[in-house]
Image (cartoon, rainbow, N blue to C red; front, side, top):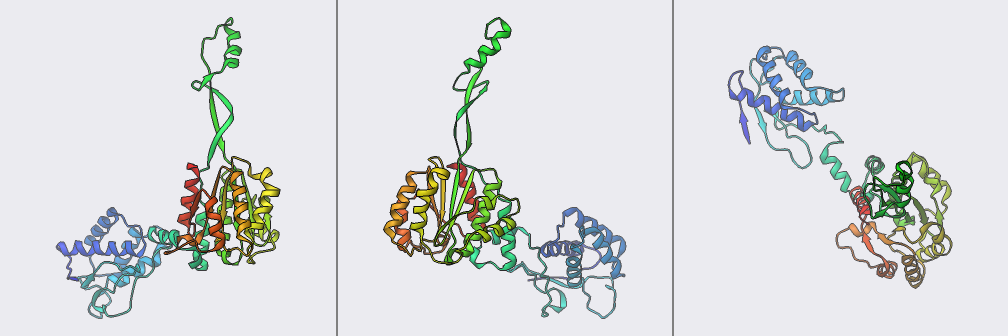
Length: 380
């Protein structure tokens, strides 16, 4: 730990001004090198006899937004101390001690009162480190405030949609075969001679996506985030069908077709009657296969099935219905939020019965994992 005594002249003076700027950055302010140089010049002109002038000069230079004011004041009071009891700075800065910030993001005590409990603890909640911690945190461990922040992150997701080749072709300058009708039609203006070749090129369109989400008691916290992910998919323009199941299967596609995710989930809550109940995966999939597959799934769809595999019914029924569903879609992806935990093994009977029939097994217990899934969809 290094201690520096600073006077108005010399390299130590510049070093302390640089440390003050570093303290402001750690407290959450956006401090640029040019501002530090400006503040250094201002102190050279003002001196240190009037503490209020020094504070005002730093506020004018470093504070850009109203919410930066309390952060600046806390950092100023912590850093610009004096040994004596006089109200000014007496022509010199106090001794300061500097060390690297700990993992908690707090600054250690500075100056002669190093034994006190004073800290600069105001760190922006939207800092890069805080956002990354929130992105990777398990949904089940979030506080109420963190849950709201994570939900806002999911609202901003822009998934990459899976594409498939369309049966229709488009006329262009390049393609896989000549556009004979278009060329003949344009040749009427040139005496029947085709002066410009036109080609047909294949086009693509988004694949249908079907999300089947477990809303039983063991999945309640995760399923609500997954429904917000489904809302983000629908807002991106993908042809999405959404079903939820506990002890019965419920289609909620229409309830999600509103712009506000909060309003969409309120409509879903009014529609669904088996929240946080038991789990009958096999029977729910049987209803999906018998009633909805031809209307919503089709052969080109990507099916996302989210569940932890806790099955109260017969696992053999689940295995049979999973095999039927796999034959009816393009890709079948099982999403298990518990799979992200250390030491996870597919121990439940339902999960063991389902895994032989899935194309991919994906963990999804955080914003980062759902963002990776949204990116992964574009590669299917």
